[in-house]
Image (tube, rainbow over all chains, first blue to last red; front, side):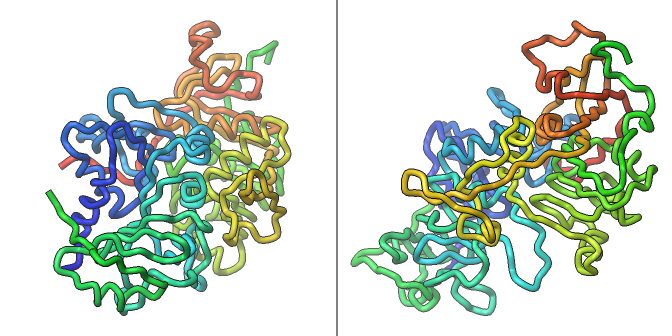
Length: 219
Length: 232
């Protein structure tokens, strides 16, 4: 069975480490915050200028001056800091964020990512995505393995305009955990009950399949 | 005005000198920390042909979105737009030009502009459509883009508190692009929720020192929330 959005978030959460500063993109990445392991401290960075993003507020604590990068109202945790957009992107561009998780339309074997622009459709903008992928060393891309019509999103060459070049090393799809090494996707784990055949069929870029590919485990 | 006293009492005076074709740098992220009354004054003035530099362009009927209603904006420099139908329509009709700029690059363009740095190298956007027509250079085996900084004829800023000398403090995440915009205007206008007497603000807590600020006005704010999200 393909992973649900919640399961994808759970799998990504297994990559968190105590003391990590983490930037989570919109969509599935946001859900990762719900699965931080018990007893582990992570600090969430929101690129509009908040390090230490907390839960959503209550009706009583709602504050127009406290929002996240998705423009939702939020709170700050104890030990948070708030700063300008230039400071925020200095952290990102300077490589100070330990883990970045974001969605994409396509990823290719060279670590290129396309996530912001579909030609001939209205382009709303890249927001902070280009800065995040260029600045972070440790990035996990979360996306479905193939489009609804069955076309692979793991390609030899991205077909859409890029968000970043050569910056992606780890991809979690609804079918598999893959890492990019030497111009190939390497199948590291598969979703429970998903066959290697199915993953192979839905991966357009070159795929290395090790002798043993474990199933993902969820606590 | 006398000495360092930057306080003005009317919005008309706050935006005096604004002319057709000028470049305005605006603080704010989404609808958070936007200089909403200064924007309303620009609409009242019906200034046309403006280039507006801001992370976003407001929504239909609020924030920078109201300047689209009478086609006052010629060009928008932003990282994320299209939360408003009017923006989309004017873009598709060719009535509005848009220069999409990565958010961190946009912030740095303002910061550098205000700091007298004409351009800077960044890895952001290398190999993407943003790099088209831009000079690149390699440092330590990595490719970087040369990005030019931005300055404006006016900067419009929303602060929380200011003293009469134009020292400004922002509140929570309403800070965002505001302190950067404040440095990059030939004329920087700050509207705040409260003007306090000189000496009341703790000097080490000032976000924007008064040297960057030309005019300060106290206003009242709607502070509309784009996406009210509460715990269930």
